[in-house]
Image (cartoon, rainbow, N blue to C red; front, top):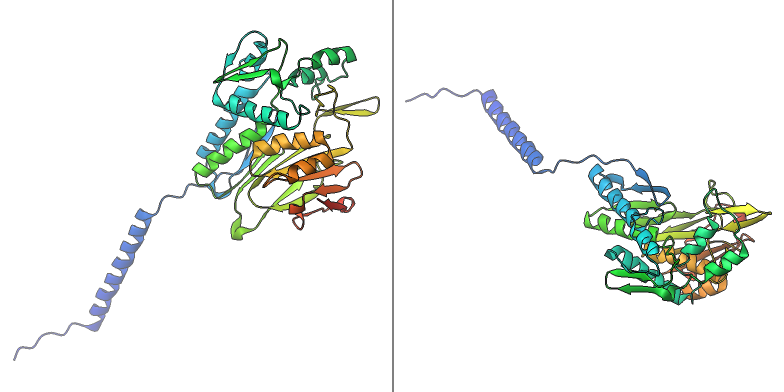
Length: 356
């Protein structure tokens, strides 16, 4: 009979334990190898473009490389549209007015076509050739003043959107001295361009704030709505006058408090009536547009401000996916019916709402 020496039980235990440890180590190694390295997010970034502070917040998807891409696009747009920059496309178009056409890129023709469409919609009350009038008044600069009425009258002859000719990739202003001012659309266009970049990079959520032109992108955790405020016209730095609960959209406000000067006890703001050459006389303090397209929100906020509360809300009520909010000098709020239940005021004096 052959007697085999018994292996001690603790040897089996150690062997089993070694197998378990090896298996765990292999699992961890495979897990590490298969996992993409996490790039740390970058805090919100702000830079100055279009004469204002532009802030982007990409939350957990914010990498330095992506922020650079977004701000580079803003810089490109400013370079094309800045009327104070002699080399910009807009400056070259204005300088060649009445003489010859200027070749431009697709950004210019796209924004200009949108501006001309809104000029037509408003019957010329909104006009992208208002540039010669804005230069005359210089509101927003230290040289802001009330021009001589004779100069206003003669300059008004140069405000005529029908005299803008887009031919392929060229733009021509037919009257010498004409001047484009696309400031009512450029930030909206820029926000839309940034939104395209965010979507192409699969960003889950972000906030674009281009000097008050807001775009809330994507969805918050648990599908919570975005809370977006409308500035208090009486105290811009204080609590917002109104707060809205919204899904992804753009929110743009035009108001008398943005750029103005006071002379003889009267406020002269930067939103001009293209028919008179003077800042619009109105009982409105602000007009806000909410919709998916930021260029439309930008243009429409100016257009409905010019139209006034009644005509403005009538126009918006005929547009799909667009809502508006007006605050008048009695501190009463008139808003689109679609906002009912999704808008409120943290300030007691703005509690009077009319929904239409």
